[in-house]
Length: 230
Image (cartoon, rainbow, N blue to C red; front, side, top):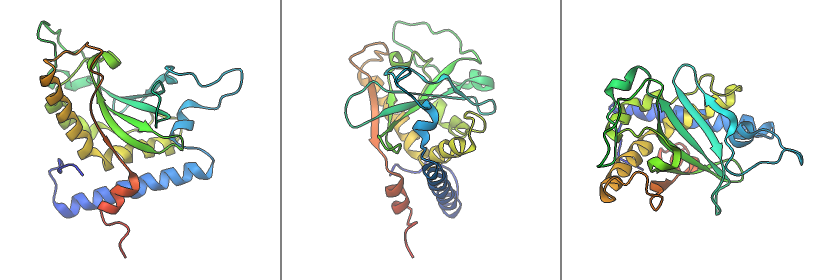
């Protein structure tokens, strides 16, 4: 588990993580009882006339939260152990002037606008609808306005969904996932920026796609937190 980023007393932090873990499991269980999971709720139901398509963003127009400024889409294009992955963005909003941009050495970046999006994290999902990895990407992957990790860390509490999805269960699932793995997200962002220095900020070099990654498991995290102990 990554080193703690949250500046809170240990007991308070442990309680918050336990609440997030149980909330995440509860939302997942309630979705499963309906034959659903976060992926199927996002991509919808397909038939022979409208099959699931690689590279297509789901849901159409992305999931957008009116309160937090979070924006999420799901797509699939990588062979291997994943079904697909969610890309998670935040809108700069009122914090635009507080965010430091990451730019290539030969660039003179324009000021960040309130409507600009910056990528925070991506979540790899398996075929059963469970999260199995977190990863960060280079700028060219999403076409984002890239913001430094140190600027993003204070924004991580904004990662919450209230009305991004049309079902409360999906909003709960994402919100609790972000809370449970907040430290990991922060650490991966820091590792992303370290990786950028080693490639001389080649932000549009397609030879460099994923800049940091780690496997995750909800059950393993709960075990780390001692939530299975009698």
